[in-house]
Length: 276
Length: 332
Image (cartoon, rainbow over all chains, first blue to last red):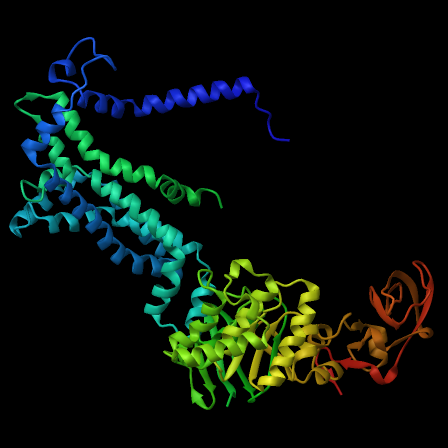
Protein backbone atom coordinates (compact mmCIF):
# COMPACT_ATOMS: atom_id res chain seq x y z
CA UNK A 1 0.00 0.00 0.00
CA UNK A 2 1.24 3.53 -0.65
CA UNK A 3 2.57 5.55 2.20
CA UNK A 4 -0.41 6.85 4.17
CA UNK A 5 -0.55 10.61 4.55
CA UNK A 6 -2.35 11.80 7.64
CA UNK A 7 -4.73 14.76 7.36
CA UNK A 8 -2.39 16.72 9.63
CA UNK A 9 0.49 16.04 7.27
CA UNK A 10 -1.66 17.18 4.32
CA UNK A 11 -2.41 20.50 6.03
CA UNK A 12 1.26 21.08 6.79
CA UNK A 13 2.28 20.19 3.22
CA UNK A 14 -0.36 22.48 1.74
CA UNK A 15 0.61 25.36 4.00
CA UNK A 16 4.28 24.86 3.15
CA UNK A 17 3.53 24.77 -0.57
CA UNK A 18 1.51 27.96 -0.38
CA UNK A 19 4.25 29.64 1.61
CA UNK A 20 6.93 28.67 -0.89
CA UNK A 21 4.72 29.65 -3.80
CA UNK A 22 4.04 33.08 -2.33
CA UNK A 23 7.71 33.54 -1.52
CA UNK A 24 8.68 32.86 -5.14
CA UNK A 25 5.84 34.93 -6.52
CA UNK A 26 6.33 37.80 -4.07
CA UNK A 27 8.62 39.99 -6.23
CA UNK A 28 6.06 40.03 -9.01
CA UNK A 29 3.24 40.63 -6.55
CA UNK A 30 5.15 43.52 -5.03
CA UNK A 31 5.74 45.01 -8.48
CA UNK A 32 2.04 44.81 -9.26
CA UNK A 33 1.14 46.49 -5.97
CA UNK A 34 3.79 49.18 -6.37
CA UNK A 35 2.49 50.01 -9.85
CA UNK A 36 -0.75 51.18 -8.24
CA UNK A 37 0.97 53.47 -5.70
CA UNK A 38 1.99 57.09 -6.02
CA UNK A 39 5.77 57.72 -6.22
CA UNK A 40 5.73 58.98 -2.64
CA UNK A 41 4.00 55.85 -1.41
CA UNK A 42 6.38 53.72 -3.43
CA UNK A 43 9.41 54.89 -1.47
CA UNK A 44 7.64 55.18 1.88
CA UNK A 45 9.20 53.48 4.90
CA UNK A 46 7.75 51.28 6.29
CA UNK A 47 6.24 50.09 2.95
CA UNK A 48 2.54 49.29 2.98
CA UNK A 49 1.11 46.15 1.41
CA UNK A 50 -2.53 46.95 0.78
CA UNK A 51 -3.44 50.01 2.82
CA UNK A 52 -2.77 52.95 0.57
CA UNK A 53 -4.57 55.01 -2.04
CA UNK A 54 -4.69 52.87 -5.15
CA UNK A 55 -4.18 54.88 -8.35
CA UNK A 56 -3.96 54.20 -12.08
CA UNK A 57 -1.99 57.35 -12.81
CA UNK A 58 1.31 55.54 -13.39
CA UNK A 59 -0.10 53.47 -16.23
CA UNK A 60 -1.49 56.60 -17.81
CA UNK A 61 1.76 58.52 -17.58
CA UNK A 62 3.85 55.65 -18.88
CA UNK A 63 1.59 55.11 -21.86
CA UNK A 64 1.48 58.81 -22.69
CA UNK A 65 5.19 59.25 -22.40
CA UNK A 66 6.42 56.24 -24.29
CA UNK A 67 3.80 54.75 -26.55
CA UNK A 68 3.54 51.18 -25.27
CA UNK A 69 2.10 49.72 -28.43
CA UNK A 70 5.18 50.24 -30.57
CA UNK A 71 7.39 48.36 -28.10
CA UNK A 72 4.80 45.66 -27.76
CA UNK A 73 4.69 45.14 -31.50
CA UNK A 74 8.49 44.93 -31.67
CA UNK A 75 8.52 42.32 -28.91
CA UNK A 76 5.93 40.26 -30.76
CA UNK A 77 7.82 40.48 -34.06
CA UNK A 78 11.14 39.56 -32.48
CA UNK A 79 9.91 36.66 -30.35
CA UNK A 80 7.52 35.13 -32.90
CA UNK A 81 9.84 35.84 -35.81
CA UNK A 82 12.91 34.31 -34.21
CA UNK A 83 10.92 31.27 -33.11
CA UNK A 84 9.46 30.60 -36.55
CA UNK A 85 12.81 31.12 -38.25
CA UNK A 86 14.37 28.80 -35.71
CA UNK A 87 11.73 26.15 -36.43
CA UNK A 88 12.43 26.35 -40.15
CA UNK A 89 16.10 25.54 -39.54
CA UNK A 90 15.68 23.20 -36.60
CA UNK A 91 13.11 20.82 -38.09
CA UNK A 92 15.43 19.44 -40.79
CA UNK A 93 18.34 19.37 -38.33
CA UNK A 94 16.35 17.49 -35.70
CA UNK A 95 14.98 15.14 -38.38
CA UNK A 96 18.43 14.12 -39.50
CA UNK A 97 19.69 13.69 -35.94
CA UNK A 98 16.71 11.65 -34.88
CA UNK A 99 16.18 9.44 -37.92
CA UNK A 100 19.54 9.22 -39.65
CA UNK A 101 21.97 9.46 -36.75
CA UNK A 102 25.65 9.03 -37.44
CA UNK A 103 28.56 8.25 -35.16
CA UNK A 104 29.01 11.91 -34.32
CA UNK A 105 25.38 12.97 -33.91
CA UNK A 106 25.46 12.99 -30.11
CA UNK A 107 28.70 14.99 -30.18
CA UNK A 108 27.19 17.57 -32.53
CA UNK A 109 24.18 17.93 -30.29
CA UNK A 110 26.36 18.39 -27.20
CA UNK A 111 28.49 20.93 -29.02
CA UNK A 112 25.39 22.90 -30.04
CA UNK A 113 24.14 22.95 -26.46
CA UNK A 114 27.58 23.93 -25.20
CA UNK A 115 27.35 27.21 -27.10
CA UNK A 116 24.67 28.20 -24.60
CA UNK A 117 27.30 27.99 -21.86
CA UNK A 118 29.21 30.92 -23.30
CA UNK A 119 28.37 34.17 -21.48
CA UNK A 120 26.75 36.46 -24.04
CA UNK A 121 28.92 39.34 -22.96
CA UNK A 122 31.93 37.42 -24.26
CA UNK A 123 30.76 37.97 -27.84
CA UNK A 124 29.11 41.34 -27.33
CA UNK A 125 31.92 43.37 -28.90
CA UNK A 126 32.33 41.35 -32.13
CA UNK A 127 28.60 41.09 -32.71
CA UNK A 128 28.08 44.77 -31.98
CA UNK A 129 30.85 45.73 -34.40
CA UNK A 130 29.55 43.40 -37.13
CA UNK A 131 26.02 44.75 -36.71
CA UNK A 132 27.25 48.30 -36.85
CA UNK A 133 29.39 47.71 -39.95
CA UNK A 134 26.52 46.00 -41.73
CA UNK A 135 24.18 48.83 -40.80
CA UNK A 136 22.09 46.42 -38.72
CA UNK A 137 22.02 48.28 -35.44
CA UNK A 138 18.54 49.09 -34.25
CA UNK A 139 17.13 46.69 -36.85
CA UNK A 140 14.33 44.24 -36.17
CA UNK A 141 15.72 41.74 -38.67
CA UNK A 142 19.11 41.64 -37.01
CA UNK A 143 17.48 40.96 -33.67
CA UNK A 144 15.27 38.24 -35.12
CA UNK A 145 18.33 36.51 -36.55
CA UNK A 146 20.47 36.91 -33.44
CA UNK A 147 17.77 35.70 -31.05
CA UNK A 148 17.05 32.82 -33.40
CA UNK A 149 20.71 31.83 -33.25
CA UNK A 150 20.79 32.09 -29.48
CA UNK A 151 17.78 29.84 -29.02
CA UNK A 152 18.47 27.48 -31.90
CA UNK A 153 20.31 24.90 -29.76
CA UNK A 154 17.30 24.64 -27.48
CA UNK A 155 14.83 24.39 -30.37
CA UNK A 156 16.91 21.68 -32.06
CA UNK A 157 17.38 19.76 -28.84
CA UNK A 158 13.69 19.86 -27.91
CA UNK A 159 12.56 18.84 -31.38
CA UNK A 160 15.20 16.09 -31.45
CA UNK A 161 13.89 14.58 -28.24
CA UNK A 162 10.31 14.72 -29.56
CA UNK A 163 11.20 13.25 -32.92
CA UNK A 164 13.01 10.38 -31.25
CA UNK A 165 9.73 9.39 -29.64
CA UNK A 166 8.17 8.87 -33.05
CA UNK A 167 8.57 5.26 -34.25
CA UNK A 168 10.85 5.20 -37.28
CA UNK A 169 8.70 2.47 -38.84
CA UNK A 170 5.86 4.93 -39.41
CA UNK A 171 8.13 7.12 -41.52
CA UNK A 172 9.37 4.02 -43.35
CA UNK A 173 5.76 3.09 -44.05
CA UNK A 174 5.25 6.54 -45.54
CA UNK A 175 8.28 5.99 -47.76
CA UNK A 176 6.92 2.63 -48.89
CA UNK A 177 3.61 4.39 -49.60
CA UNK A 178 5.33 6.63 -52.09
CA UNK A 179 6.03 9.70 -49.96
CA UNK A 180 9.09 11.76 -50.83
CA UNK A 181 10.99 13.54 -48.07
CA UNK A 182 8.80 16.64 -48.21
CA UNK A 183 5.57 14.64 -47.98
CA UNK A 184 6.97 12.45 -45.24
CA UNK A 185 7.75 15.48 -43.09
CA UNK A 186 4.61 17.45 -43.97
CA UNK A 187 1.93 14.76 -43.80
CA UNK A 188 3.32 12.31 -41.28
CA UNK A 189 6.11 13.67 -39.10
CA UNK A 190 4.85 17.17 -38.28
CA UNK A 191 1.23 16.23 -37.51
CA UNK A 192 2.53 13.56 -35.14
CA UNK A 193 4.98 15.98 -33.54
CA UNK A 194 2.45 18.80 -33.01
CA UNK A 195 2.45 18.62 -29.18
CA UNK A 196 6.24 18.73 -29.15
CA UNK A 197 6.37 21.57 -31.63
CA UNK A 198 3.76 23.51 -29.66
CA UNK A 199 5.77 23.19 -26.44
CA UNK A 200 8.94 24.22 -28.24
CA UNK A 201 7.26 27.25 -29.80
CA UNK A 202 5.77 28.38 -26.48
CA UNK A 203 9.03 28.03 -24.59
CA UNK A 204 11.00 29.88 -27.22
CA UNK A 205 8.56 32.74 -27.50
CA UNK A 206 8.93 33.20 -23.75
CA UNK A 207 12.73 33.04 -23.91
CA UNK A 208 12.88 35.53 -26.76
CA UNK A 209 10.33 37.86 -25.16
CA UNK A 210 12.38 38.06 -21.96
CA UNK A 211 15.76 38.33 -23.63
CA UNK A 212 17.29 41.56 -22.34
CA UNK A 213 20.97 41.51 -23.10
CA UNK A 214 20.96 41.67 -26.89
CA UNK A 215 17.75 43.65 -27.16
CA UNK A 216 19.17 46.38 -24.94
CA UNK A 217 22.58 46.50 -26.59
CA UNK A 218 21.57 46.36 -30.22
CA UNK A 219 18.50 48.56 -30.33
CA UNK A 220 17.86 52.24 -29.92
CA UNK A 221 14.56 53.73 -31.01
CA UNK A 222 13.09 51.87 -33.95
CA UNK A 223 13.55 48.24 -33.02
CA UNK A 224 13.38 48.55 -29.24
CA UNK A 225 11.13 45.93 -27.67
CA UNK A 226 9.50 45.90 -24.23
CA UNK A 227 12.79 45.12 -22.46
CA UNK A 228 14.08 48.49 -23.55
CA UNK A 229 10.74 49.99 -22.56
CA UNK A 230 11.29 48.89 -18.96
CA UNK A 231 14.93 49.84 -18.94
CA UNK A 232 14.10 53.38 -19.98
CA UNK A 233 12.37 53.81 -16.64
CA UNK A 234 15.53 53.08 -14.68
CA UNK A 235 16.80 56.45 -15.67
CA UNK A 236 19.39 58.93 -14.44
CA UNK A 237 16.50 61.25 -13.60
CA UNK A 238 16.01 59.34 -10.43
CA UNK A 239 14.26 56.25 -9.24
CA UNK A 240 10.62 56.23 -10.20
CA UNK A 241 9.63 52.96 -8.63
CA UNK A 242 5.94 53.36 -9.21
CA UNK A 243 6.26 54.15 -12.89
CA UNK A 244 8.98 51.52 -13.28
CA UNK A 245 6.63 48.96 -11.75
CA UNK A 246 3.82 50.00 -14.05
CA UNK A 247 6.10 49.73 -17.06
CA UNK A 248 7.32 46.31 -15.93
CA UNK A 249 3.82 44.98 -15.49
CA UNK A 250 2.83 46.26 -18.91
CA UNK A 251 5.84 44.45 -20.35
CA UNK A 252 5.37 41.10 -18.68
CA UNK A 253 1.57 40.94 -18.66
CA UNK A 254 1.18 39.52 -22.19
CA UNK A 255 3.66 36.74 -21.61
CA UNK A 256 2.25 35.95 -18.16
CA UNK A 257 -1.21 35.59 -19.66
CA UNK A 258 0.10 33.42 -22.48
CA UNK A 259 2.04 31.29 -20.03
CA UNK A 260 -0.99 30.89 -17.80
CA UNK A 261 -3.20 29.60 -20.58
CA UNK A 262 -0.57 27.25 -21.93
CA UNK A 263 0.91 26.05 -18.65
CA UNK A 264 -0.16 22.45 -19.14
CA UNK A 265 1.49 22.31 -22.50
CA UNK A 266 4.62 24.03 -21.18
CA UNK A 267 5.02 21.71 -18.23
CA UNK A 268 4.51 18.59 -20.31
CA UNK A 269 6.93 19.92 -22.88
CA UNK A 270 9.65 20.51 -20.35
CA UNK A 271 9.20 17.33 -18.36
CA UNK A 272 8.01 14.67 -20.78
CA UNK A 273 11.41 13.12 -21.20
CA UNK A 274 11.96 12.80 -17.49
CA UNK A 275 10.03 9.58 -17.04
CA UNK A 276 10.43 6.92 -19.71
CA UNK B 1 4.83 -9.10 -63.26
CA UNK B 2 6.09 -9.57 -59.74
CA UNK B 3 9.38 -11.39 -60.10
CA UNK B 4 12.28 -10.45 -57.86
CA UNK B 5 15.91 -11.39 -58.47
CA UNK B 6 18.74 -10.97 -55.99
CA UNK B 7 22.20 -11.25 -57.55
CA UNK B 8 25.27 -11.31 -55.35
CA UNK B 9 23.52 -9.15 -52.77
CA UNK B 10 25.73 -8.42 -49.79
CA UNK B 11 25.03 -6.27 -46.73
CA UNK B 12 27.43 -4.99 -44.12
CA UNK B 13 26.81 -2.59 -41.28
CA UNK B 14 30.22 -1.00 -40.88
CA UNK B 15 32.64 -3.86 -40.37
CA UNK B 16 30.00 -6.42 -39.59
CA UNK B 17 28.86 -8.49 -42.56
CA UNK B 18 25.27 -9.43 -41.91
CA UNK B 19 24.49 -11.01 -45.28
CA UNK B 20 27.25 -12.63 -47.33
CA UNK B 21 26.84 -12.56 -51.14
CA UNK B 22 23.46 -14.09 -51.83
CA UNK B 23 21.58 -15.16 -54.96
CA UNK B 24 17.86 -15.73 -54.88
CA UNK B 25 15.07 -15.93 -57.42
CA UNK B 26 11.42 -15.25 -56.63
CA UNK B 27 8.92 -16.02 -59.38
CA UNK B 28 5.87 -13.96 -60.18
CA UNK B 29 2.93 -14.91 -57.98
CA UNK B 30 4.96 -17.03 -55.57
CA UNK B 31 4.44 -16.96 -51.81
CA UNK B 32 7.98 -17.04 -50.50
CA UNK B 33 8.76 -17.23 -46.81
CA UNK B 34 12.09 -16.20 -45.28
CA UNK B 35 12.44 -18.16 -42.07
CA UNK B 36 15.19 -18.53 -39.53
CA UNK B 37 16.19 -17.83 -35.94
CA UNK B 38 16.42 -14.29 -34.56
CA UNK B 39 19.30 -12.33 -36.01
CA UNK B 40 19.65 -14.50 -39.12
CA UNK B 41 19.18 -11.55 -41.46
CA UNK B 42 15.70 -12.31 -42.78
CA UNK B 43 14.29 -8.87 -41.92
CA UNK B 44 17.41 -7.23 -43.31
CA UNK B 45 16.95 -9.12 -46.55
CA UNK B 46 13.33 -7.99 -46.76
CA UNK B 47 14.35 -4.40 -46.13
CA UNK B 48 16.96 -4.64 -48.86
CA UNK B 49 14.25 -5.75 -51.29
CA UNK B 50 12.00 -2.92 -50.06
CA UNK B 51 14.73 -0.33 -50.46
CA UNK B 52 14.72 0.68 -46.80
CA UNK B 53 18.35 -0.46 -46.60
CA UNK B 54 21.01 -0.04 -49.29
CA UNK B 55 22.83 -3.15 -50.47
CA UNK B 56 26.57 -2.96 -49.90
CA UNK B 57 27.07 -4.92 -53.11
CA UNK B 58 25.01 -6.72 -55.70
CA UNK B 59 21.87 -6.12 -57.71
CA UNK B 60 18.19 -6.36 -57.03
CA UNK B 61 15.91 -6.74 -60.03
CA UNK B 62 12.17 -6.25 -59.80
CA UNK B 63 10.21 -7.31 -62.88
CA UNK B 64 13.47 -7.45 -64.75
CA UNK B 65 14.26 -3.81 -63.95
CA UNK B 66 17.38 -3.00 -61.94
CA UNK B 67 15.93 -1.50 -58.77
CA UNK B 68 19.15 -1.47 -56.72
CA UNK B 69 19.40 2.32 -56.69
CA UNK B 70 15.69 3.11 -56.64
CA UNK B 71 14.12 4.57 -53.47
CA UNK B 72 11.34 2.54 -51.82
CA UNK B 73 8.63 4.76 -53.30
CA UNK B 74 9.63 3.87 -56.83
CA UNK B 75 9.99 0.09 -56.55
CA UNK B 76 6.30 -0.69 -56.88
CA UNK B 77 6.23 -2.71 -53.68
CA UNK B 78 4.05 -2.54 -50.59
CA UNK B 79 5.07 -3.51 -47.08
CA UNK B 80 3.19 -4.63 -43.98
CA UNK B 81 5.19 -4.00 -40.80
CA UNK B 82 5.30 -6.03 -37.61
CA UNK B 83 4.08 -3.05 -35.61
CA UNK B 84 1.54 -2.19 -38.35
CA UNK B 85 3.04 1.34 -38.57
CA UNK B 86 -0.34 2.99 -39.08
CA UNK B 87 -0.55 6.79 -39.12
CA UNK B 88 -2.05 7.51 -35.69
CA UNK B 89 -3.36 10.95 -36.60
CA UNK B 90 -5.34 9.69 -39.61
CA UNK B 91 -8.59 7.75 -39.77
CA UNK B 92 -8.67 4.24 -41.25
CA UNK B 93 -9.92 5.69 -44.53
CA UNK B 94 -7.13 8.25 -44.66
CA UNK B 95 -4.56 5.62 -43.74
CA UNK B 96 -5.61 3.36 -46.58
CA UNK B 97 -5.93 6.35 -48.91
CA UNK B 98 -2.45 7.72 -48.17
CA UNK B 99 -0.49 5.82 -50.84
CA UNK B 100 -3.08 6.83 -53.42
CA UNK B 101 -2.79 10.45 -52.31
CA UNK B 102 0.98 10.19 -52.77
CA UNK B 103 0.38 8.83 -56.25
CA UNK B 104 -1.80 11.84 -57.06
CA UNK B 105 -4.81 9.71 -57.84
CA UNK B 106 -8.22 11.19 -58.62
CA UNK B 107 -10.83 11.30 -55.86
CA UNK B 108 -13.27 8.92 -57.54
CA UNK B 109 -10.61 6.27 -58.19
CA UNK B 110 -9.24 6.70 -54.67
CA UNK B 111 -12.69 6.16 -53.15
CA UNK B 112 -13.32 3.13 -55.32
CA UNK B 113 -10.08 1.43 -54.29
CA UNK B 114 -10.46 2.26 -50.61
CA UNK B 115 -14.02 0.97 -50.50
CA UNK B 116 -12.96 -2.19 -52.31
CA UNK B 117 -10.13 -2.86 -49.85
CA UNK B 118 -12.40 -2.09 -46.89
CA UNK B 119 -14.92 -4.60 -48.20
CA UNK B 120 -12.41 -7.40 -48.74
CA UNK B 121 -10.93 -6.90 -45.29
CA UNK B 122 -14.18 -6.25 -43.38
CA UNK B 123 -13.16 -2.76 -42.39
CA UNK B 124 -16.26 -0.89 -43.56
CA UNK B 125 -17.58 -0.48 -40.00
CA UNK B 126 -14.37 1.09 -38.75
CA UNK B 127 -13.52 3.24 -41.72
CA UNK B 128 -13.77 6.52 -39.81
CA UNK B 129 -12.08 5.41 -36.61
CA UNK B 130 -8.50 6.15 -35.65
CA UNK B 131 -5.94 3.35 -35.21
CA UNK B 132 -5.91 3.96 -31.48
CA UNK B 133 -9.56 2.86 -31.33
CA UNK B 134 -8.96 -0.47 -33.06
CA UNK B 135 -7.93 -3.91 -31.84
CA UNK B 136 -4.68 -5.57 -32.92
CA UNK B 137 -6.34 -7.69 -35.58
CA UNK B 138 -8.24 -4.73 -37.01
CA UNK B 139 -5.08 -2.65 -37.14
CA UNK B 140 -3.32 -5.45 -38.96
CA UNK B 141 -6.10 -5.50 -41.55
CA UNK B 142 -5.81 -1.75 -42.04
CA UNK B 143 -2.09 -2.20 -42.65
CA UNK B 144 -2.86 -4.88 -45.22
CA UNK B 145 -5.53 -2.67 -46.78
CA UNK B 146 -3.04 0.15 -47.13
CA UNK B 147 -0.75 -2.25 -48.98
CA UNK B 148 -3.48 -3.70 -51.21
CA UNK B 149 -4.74 -0.40 -52.63
CA UNK B 150 -1.36 0.27 -54.18
CA UNK B 151 -1.82 -2.81 -56.40
CA UNK B 152 1.92 -3.48 -56.08
CA UNK B 153 4.07 -5.95 -57.98
CA UNK B 154 4.77 -7.72 -54.71
CA UNK B 155 3.77 -7.58 -51.06
CA UNK B 156 6.39 -7.65 -48.33
CA UNK B 157 5.37 -8.86 -44.87
CA UNK B 158 7.72 -8.37 -41.92
CA UNK B 159 6.56 -10.75 -39.17
CA UNK B 160 3.05 -9.31 -39.39
CA UNK B 161 1.46 -11.77 -36.97
CA UNK B 162 4.04 -11.64 -34.18
CA UNK B 163 2.11 -9.08 -32.16
CA UNK B 164 -1.19 -10.95 -32.26
CA UNK B 165 -2.42 -13.53 -29.78
CA UNK B 166 -2.36 -17.20 -30.77
CA UNK B 167 -5.99 -17.59 -31.80
CA UNK B 168 -5.95 -14.43 -33.90
CA UNK B 169 -2.70 -15.52 -35.49
CA UNK B 170 -4.24 -18.71 -36.86
CA UNK B 171 -7.20 -16.79 -38.30
CA UNK B 172 -5.05 -14.07 -39.89
CA UNK B 173 -2.72 -16.70 -41.33
CA UNK B 174 -5.63 -18.16 -43.26
CA UNK B 175 -6.85 -14.73 -44.34
CA UNK B 176 -3.44 -13.86 -45.75
CA UNK B 177 -3.23 -17.18 -47.57
CA UNK B 178 -6.68 -16.61 -49.06
CA UNK B 179 -5.72 -13.10 -50.04
CA UNK B 180 -2.75 -14.51 -51.87
CA UNK B 181 -4.95 -16.88 -53.82
CA UNK B 182 -7.38 -14.13 -54.65
CA UNK B 183 -4.86 -11.48 -55.70
CA UNK B 184 -2.32 -13.90 -57.24
CA UNK B 185 0.42 -11.38 -56.42
CA UNK B 186 3.94 -12.24 -55.29
CA UNK B 187 4.26 -12.22 -51.52
CA UNK B 188 7.52 -12.23 -49.58
CA UNK B 189 6.88 -13.10 -45.96
CA UNK B 190 9.33 -13.01 -43.05
CA UNK B 191 8.72 -15.05 -39.91
CA UNK B 192 10.57 -16.92 -37.22
CA UNK B 193 7.62 -19.27 -36.82
CA UNK B 194 8.18 -22.40 -38.85
CA UNK B 195 4.49 -23.36 -38.65
CA UNK B 196 3.58 -20.16 -40.50
CA UNK B 197 6.28 -20.97 -43.01
CA UNK B 198 5.10 -24.52 -43.59
CA UNK B 199 1.42 -23.65 -43.90
CA UNK B 200 1.64 -20.54 -46.05
CA UNK B 201 4.61 -20.88 -48.36
CA UNK B 202 5.01 -22.05 -51.95
CA UNK B 203 8.74 -21.76 -51.33
CA UNK B 204 10.68 -21.47 -48.09
CA UNK B 205 14.10 -19.85 -47.74
CA UNK B 206 15.82 -20.99 -44.55
CA UNK B 207 18.41 -18.50 -43.34
CA UNK B 208 21.13 -18.73 -40.72
CA UNK B 209 23.61 -15.91 -40.00
CA UNK B 210 22.81 -14.37 -43.37
CA UNK B 211 23.44 -17.59 -45.28
CA UNK B 212 20.78 -19.35 -47.30
CA UNK B 213 20.77 -22.87 -45.87
CA UNK B 214 18.12 -24.25 -48.17
CA UNK B 215 15.46 -23.15 -50.62
CA UNK B 216 12.56 -25.41 -51.44
CA UNK B 217 8.90 -26.21 -51.02
CA UNK B 218 7.68 -26.94 -47.49
CA UNK B 219 7.49 -30.68 -48.12
CA UNK B 220 10.93 -30.75 -49.74
CA UNK B 221 12.41 -29.14 -46.64
CA UNK B 222 10.46 -31.54 -44.46
CA UNK B 223 11.42 -34.69 -46.34
CA UNK B 224 14.94 -33.87 -47.52
CA UNK B 225 16.59 -31.24 -45.33
CA UNK B 226 20.00 -30.33 -46.73
CA UNK B 227 21.75 -30.19 -43.39
CA UNK B 228 21.25 -30.69 -39.66
CA UNK B 229 20.30 -27.05 -39.15
CA UNK B 230 17.37 -27.19 -41.57
CA UNK B 231 16.45 -30.64 -40.25
CA UNK B 232 16.26 -29.30 -36.72
CA UNK B 233 14.52 -26.08 -37.69
CA UNK B 234 11.65 -27.40 -39.77
CA UNK B 235 9.10 -29.60 -38.01
CA UNK B 236 7.64 -29.40 -34.55
CA UNK B 237 8.65 -30.96 -32.22
CA UNK B 238 12.17 -30.83 -33.65
CA UNK B 239 13.79 -33.81 -35.30
CA UNK B 240 15.77 -36.09 -33.01
CA UNK B 241 19.44 -35.82 -33.95
CA UNK B 242 21.60 -38.72 -32.78
CA UNK B 243 25.37 -38.97 -32.94
CA UNK B 244 27.89 -41.56 -31.85
CA UNK B 245 27.68 -45.33 -32.10
CA UNK B 246 24.09 -45.51 -33.29
CA UNK B 247 24.82 -43.03 -36.08
CA UNK B 248 27.96 -44.93 -37.05
CA UNK B 249 25.87 -48.06 -37.38
CA UNK B 250 24.01 -46.30 -40.18
CA UNK B 251 27.22 -45.05 -41.84
CA UNK B 252 26.74 -41.45 -40.76
CA UNK B 253 28.12 -38.96 -38.26
CA UNK B 254 24.61 -37.90 -37.29
CA UNK B 255 21.26 -39.52 -37.93
CA UNK B 256 17.91 -37.83 -37.63
CA UNK B 257 14.43 -39.20 -37.08
CA UNK B 258 11.32 -37.10 -36.66
CA UNK B 259 9.21 -37.69 -33.55
CA UNK B 260 6.26 -38.70 -35.71
CA UNK B 261 8.35 -41.42 -37.38
CA UNK B 262 9.20 -43.32 -34.20
CA UNK B 263 7.01 -46.28 -33.26
CA UNK B 264 6.29 -46.81 -29.57
CA UNK B 265 6.18 -50.20 -27.92
CA UNK B 266 8.48 -52.17 -30.16
CA UNK B 267 11.93 -51.65 -31.58
CA UNK B 268 15.64 -51.71 -30.93
CA UNK B 269 15.76 -48.68 -28.64
CA UNK B 270 14.77 -48.50 -24.99
CA UNK B 271 14.54 -45.74 -22.48
CA UNK B 272 12.72 -44.27 -19.53
CA UNK B 273 9.82 -41.83 -19.94
CA UNK B 274 10.55 -38.36 -18.63
CA UNK B 275 7.70 -36.03 -19.46
CA UNK B 276 4.63 -37.12 -21.39
CA UNK B 277 2.58 -34.27 -22.86
CA UNK B 278 -1.01 -35.38 -23.39
CA UNK B 279 -2.77 -33.08 -25.84
CA UNK B 280 -5.68 -35.37 -26.45
CA UNK B 281 -5.16 -35.50 -30.20
CA UNK B 282 -1.47 -36.32 -29.82
CA UNK B 283 0.92 -37.36 -27.12
CA UNK B 284 4.49 -36.12 -27.03
CA UNK B 285 6.71 -38.43 -25.01
CA UNK B 286 10.18 -37.29 -24.00
CA UNK B 287 12.38 -40.33 -23.36
CA UNK B 288 15.67 -40.34 -21.43
CA UNK B 289 18.43 -42.88 -20.79
CA UNK B 290 18.28 -44.20 -24.32
CA UNK B 291 22.04 -44.11 -24.76
CA UNK B 292 21.42 -42.18 -28.01
CA UNK B 293 20.85 -38.59 -27.01
CA UNK B 294 19.87 -36.79 -23.85
CA UNK B 295 16.22 -36.83 -24.88
CA UNK B 296 14.44 -38.64 -27.67
CA UNK B 297 11.05 -37.15 -28.45
CA UNK B 298 8.28 -39.29 -29.83
CA UNK B 299 4.89 -38.24 -31.18
CA UNK B 300 2.00 -40.65 -30.95
CA UNK B 301 -1.42 -40.22 -32.48
CA UNK B 302 -4.16 -40.09 -29.89
CA UNK B 303 -3.53 -40.77 -26.26
CA UNK B 304 -1.34 -43.52 -24.83
CA UNK B 305 -1.10 -44.46 -21.16
CA UNK B 306 2.53 -43.71 -20.43
CA UNK B 307 3.73 -42.11 -17.26
CA UNK B 308 6.89 -40.66 -15.86
CA UNK B 309 9.35 -43.42 -15.07
CA UNK B 310 7.89 -46.07 -17.39
CA UNK B 311 10.29 -48.16 -19.42
CA UNK B 312 9.50 -47.88 -23.09
CA UNK B 313 10.66 -49.45 -26.35
CA UNK B 314 11.10 -47.31 -29.48
CA UNK B 315 11.50 -48.23 -33.11
CA UNK B 316 12.51 -45.74 -35.80
CA UNK B 317 10.88 -46.25 -39.20
CA UNK B 318 13.93 -47.18 -41.31
CA UNK B 319 12.77 -45.44 -44.48
CA UNK B 320 12.31 -42.17 -42.59
CA UNK B 321 15.83 -42.05 -41.22
CA UNK B 322 17.98 -39.07 -42.27
CA UNK B 323 21.75 -39.38 -42.47
CA UNK B 324 24.24 -36.51 -42.15
CA UNK B 325 28.04 -36.45 -42.49
CA UNK B 326 30.57 -34.94 -40.11
CA UNK B 327 30.02 -31.46 -41.61
CA UNK B 328 26.29 -31.74 -40.96
CA UNK B 329 25.41 -32.14 -44.63
CA UNK B 330 22.87 -34.59 -45.87
CA UNK B 331 24.13 -37.95 -47.09
CA UNK B 332 21.99 -39.59 -49.73
